[in-house]
Image (cartoon, rainbow, N blue to C red; front, top):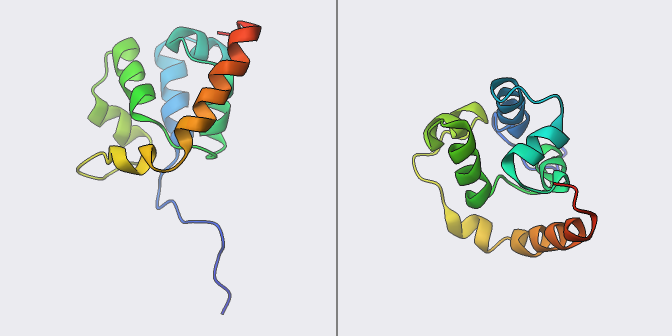
Length: 111
């Protein structure tokens, strides 16, 4: 029996969250959503492709812009855990990837 090398997500899908935000904020695309959230569009792309998780900072920004609670946002993307574990994101190397995205976007002014 072969084991899958791709980790299971058990219903986790940040695309549902982004699609709901696009509808709620009346954005036309991910680029428009990135501008509304004031984040680089590359960050949303990487999260959509599940290369990086939704970070606590991004979740807080979505909460501020949308007016929805963090619990509602997490429910939309299928995160049913009782607690959000910041250590998982902090220790995963995601900070380096996000820093690179912001650094490359700062020269382009894409957000």
